[in-house]
Image (cartoon, rainbow over all chains, first blue to last red; front, top):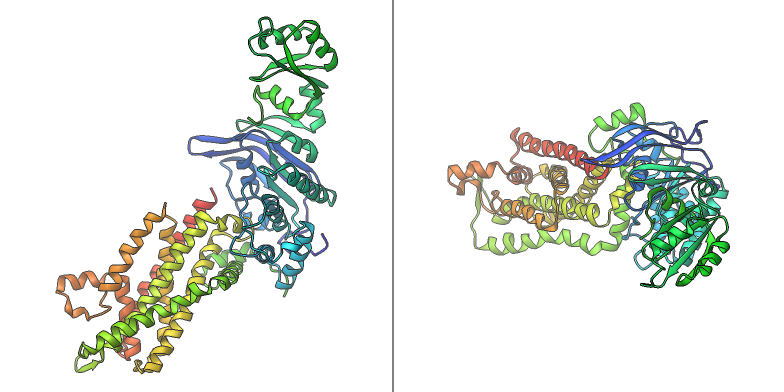
Length: 326
Length: 276
């Protein structure tokens, strides 16, 4: 990003400590506790993720960090400032990509960026220059004068990200950036986020896609039921909470001696752990091929046997006993 | 033009305590957004001008030919069109302000979620309230100005005091827009807008708009005088007919109070709805 940072009261002065610091952070809605006392710390230049299923408290956390939702308890400092009292000044330095696109459908693609830049206090000339630069970045230059409504889901998402970058934010908050996009659109988007990461933009994102978390995050927390279940880099988490390899067995229905529970129990003797899911049995082991051979040798009615590396999905399953996407 | 910093500290305290328009700050940027989007809806915008003109032609000129002169003060009568024109000015200021601040705000609040994206920027709920009401006033001022020119051209204006009719129309619009915006933050569905119609339509018809207050029996007169549009009509009628007295300040005060109360309630409600 080449143009000057918007002159917020403290723009450019990134605090020496963490950019985001939460201690015992709680969000309640009436009697419901969405976020139940989390500690989070995000450093400058980091790509930090909140991984968890729907309802884990990720979006509530993001809204508090985005200064549009006051915390119910605990402390939260963003860029060294208090979001309740300095919300406007903090927001001047954040870029926000909400879960659902909130593009201005009464305006064109270019106007969406220009008008948004104006909200941040940029002059008209600066806003126009910024729009050209960001539409190029978002690969939307050719659609600049079109209305927003007919754009594809992936284009709208890229426009939302372009819009969130008008103020050269110190932190970019992305709530479920690729949910609802087809695989190709997701990869295009990831590529753009990688570029930002390389430019040193601090990324904070939520996702319930483990591949997204693995691709983008330097460090992440696994959230479940408003709490943090584990924290670390994707690799650390996999090493700590799963095995190197996994065998996925699909078994024929109703074959005596091949009931999933029995298969799991017998294979568990040589494996570290097994999980029985509605449609398959997972065997966590350091040698998945050996486990597959054993399953065959024991004569189980195996429909398919897949050996693969452990992913964050397995970490989540181990930590919570549930799958991420169902 | 240099980059503008979001107001902080002392500046913000001043911005919060000073009413529209001095405390607007970045709110102007949202107003600018509305102007940009309006370019595509110019027909909707233009129609607002014709409404009072059509009423004037139909009721003032057409029906007025059947109605004799109206006595506006002891010993002074004016043609019916001159009697009804100021009321149409007041009523169109009300209608425009109410339309802009209710339907349009509700649409942005619930459907396009414009304010969600706006509040991710340095703008605050107060800025949103100020910008939307400011936009309603800007449009209202253009309509009122155009309608006044029509009245001057038609020879329906009797006094130089009519110059004050434009700021008066803006003040009237301010009062109604602020209250309308506050009300629309309580709306749950489009059905609730029937309540707005239920408030606006009787006021339009019965607030001494089309005939003098003296037509009513005393008990009903008291009720009519309690409606805000009555005060708007009195204010505009006095100014356009040159029948000016200190009492006009009382009428004007009604809208100053509506504006202040509406703005405060609207900003607080937006705060609760959007920053939860």
